[in-house]
Length: 160
Image 1 (cartoon, rainbow, N blue to C red):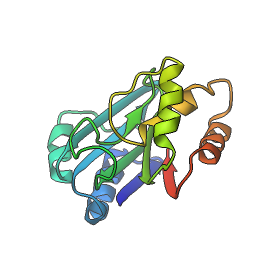
Image 2: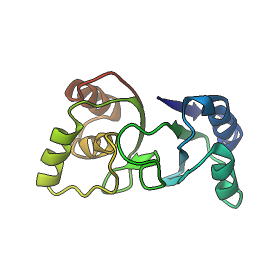
Image 3: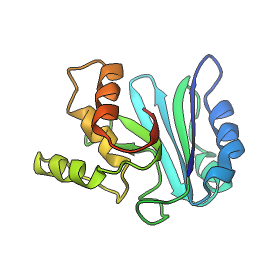
């Protein structure tokens, strides 16, 4: 079980995402993280532990901007540590994804992606999402997400 929060709007995203995660901490307290989109830059901050630990890490980070996603994790695939904390990115660092649920065919998808040259940094099922989207760089993001949802087997919620 995990908690997902996302924000697009006029207020600085740090004012929305961290309090949103705090409200969802009961859904997972193994780790937490944020992906912040600022202009053409994507910044990912994540760590093992509670939301308060993540807030300390973010104290010196600019959390302005108006688009971001966050996640609080209860580990199902992969140990509860900073490496397996969400969000996860693709090889380029241009796509960040968080998810709740289980991608039942993640090992098969990962094997195929590794065979095509993708490098993974975690032991989670979520990481396949960003890499699958990366392979569809010529497709609009909403269509790429639809295709990922069609290829991922299981029950899941996703934010990219």
